Length: 442
Image 1 (tube, one colour):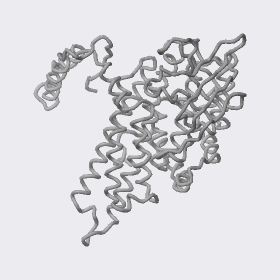
Image 2 (image 1 turned 30 degrees about the vertical axis):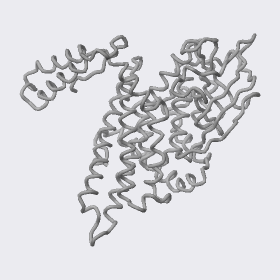
Image 3 (image 1 turned 90 degrees about the vertical axis):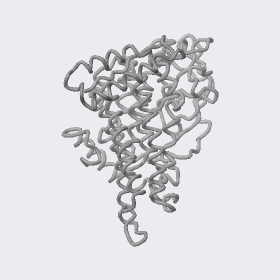
Image 4 (image 1 turned 180 degrees about the horizontal axis):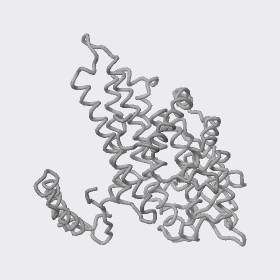
């Protein structure tokens, strides 16, 4: 285990191993068949609720574990490392992070006490309704509209690509409450699927994540009472949407690291057992190089994930759009390369659906699309960069220290300073949307 993940120890390592063993024992045995049949297993869901996995970030007063962002990442990672069931993990992440946290962050005490205990124990399943058929990356361009009435709102519109759509009971629905376009004027509502006017208009078939359910939801003159408005009116997108998406881009992405760990273990085992030309294929440099690259990508992605998660925990009120976007771009795109290398190591067998690496190959593509595409993440990163001056000061302060002046790190820092200055002097670079990224050496 130390070889696979040298960055956690003590209680964190015990927690990681506990979740991984649970996933290996309970989830793994049926994942191939559930993936093939595209079926949901509610008994497994309830079992996860019974051992506390569904409410890790929810405070104990509402039945949860009172965990933090880093622990949520470890749980998602360990679950996929043990089961390679990205679909079930996706449903869990959508429920726990983008379905439950908005109620915790913005809900009234009445709302928290009504919904969170049942979401924690698995009696209810939650989801987030943001994407629409005509507003994907341009999420603020949504058309779903909530018209104010005497005692509430009347909701009309539709949402698509909604994880847990066919099975959920509680959804956080973003809807426009003014006629103008843009992020201002969008409100969030807690919507229950049992209420009149709510319907699952289409269950969607996907390339991967087939153990998770996805649907298009439709709202036809659906009445939503005033008490189900989540947070202040007209502020749902800015208060809930963006903050929740940062958690999503961190926690749900952690499952990719678990998948890479599972893939690494399987590739080492297979390449040791597979014989060609009279010896194990692990003896060939081409295979060694692929396995080494998988491990390097896994280590790098983990370090970045843990950095962002811990920063989220230490500075909970600080927005981290640049950091979470950098993490999402890197982790999701190297995971695609890892999946491709894994199939190549397995050769023809890797192309067969009965082998887990083929499932990972199908599942991993969602990482560059869901929660904001790689193109959108790059746009966020570039818009967040506010010039080289803050970075230059950080680098100069590090170089003052004699202990690193004449070392490889010192040379690296000097080179980095030149690179940043070159980029910072680019006249095309926007400087009015500046955010700082901490580059200090820890």
